[in-house]
Amino acid sequence: MKISELSRRSGVTIPTIKYYLRDGLLPPGHATAANQAVYDEDHLRRLRLIRTLISVRHLSVSATKEILSAITHEGDLHQILGIVINARPAALTAEEEQSQQPAPPGAADALRLVAEMGWDVEEKTSAIGELGGVLAALADLGAGIDWRTLLPYAELVDKMSKLDLEQLNGLSGPLEQAERAVVVTVLLEPALLALRRLAQEDKSGRLFGTTACGQELARPEEGEPGHHGPGRSSD
Image (cartoon, rainbow, N blue to C red; front, side, top):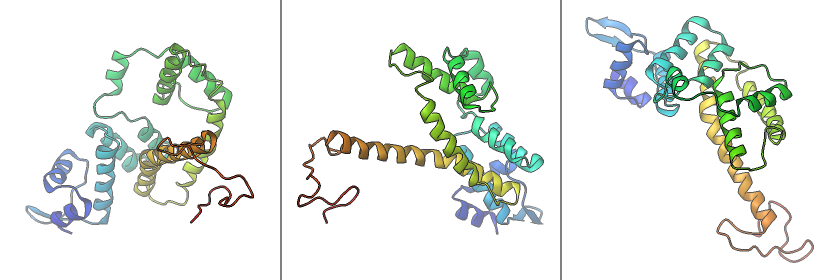
């Protein structure tokens, strides 16, 4: 396909595609003349992956390059997944973050939770700092929520992570694996958060007897007219 079709199918503008080509994010097309080239489905897939990393995950070009380099040269799915998870948004690099913020006070508690769960992770992984910051904020607020409180949540997340990694089974090439890793770590995460909020709204209404608008629900007792059991409407 020509660059115009590549742009149309990927949703990326031609100037942006040319920038990715110049910067080495996208490999060159197959030359057909001095200033002309054609592109194939691999270019399209890689371009869509680049767009997701930069536009959705908000990674810098350099962080995106690191991920693409791991895909091209390493082929180690564990490493690729780790790079995607720990990659920083474009606004702040790892060095800038370290220079601006000391280790959060709650980092030690975060590591205690990790040890209790028996997870084998790097102590410097970004999630430790994020979790530590939240635990420190909870302690400052006197919320009565510490790392032990989070253990039941951690057990649920442990099961979720197994479901996540099952999504990576049966994939062949490193590019396909990387695409799925991005789907699992970048796009599936907000979907899971949305599901949690929907479940919270449902349970809140059932527990406190109010609708989403805050109006009290008139719930018929079991056996009375209008009772249809959990999860069923009266339609």
